[in-house]
Length: 198
Image (cartoon, rainbow, N blue to C red; front, side):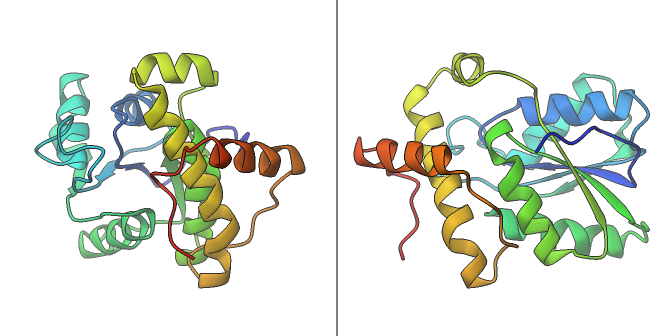
């Protein structure tokens, strides 16, 4: 998204296979940009083996290891998709009496736009700032150690940007022609395990 991280009411780390999401959220906390972290996510087929206690719980453990005080970390352990990440985090913060006017939304690098578009749809009254680890695709694949997984997830993320606005799951986002062409090429090469049905 190219957003510049800025002070926000809270950082929400969206569950995934990437523990780096927790690292970025902790960095935002250490920089004084947020007073509170929410980690959200259950398990999925791509995280069951890597994060058996749930994505949010593994993120929380990582944040505590990195020195974030326990009282500054909330866990939302039920969400199984981006929409639930946003909705359940919003409900948790409301139940805790936390006022939210802005959210620093932390995700995998290739999920920033999808997360942003989902939050704008489901939480339109807050300012949404996207953040992720700034790295090239090659460096990201190396950090995860599974090129197939990353490309499948990337193709799935682009497809959702194309089809989810019509389903009411996110706001419309422009998809540049080179991105659409790369999506079709990768889809044609079989990177399809994360596609949703039409």
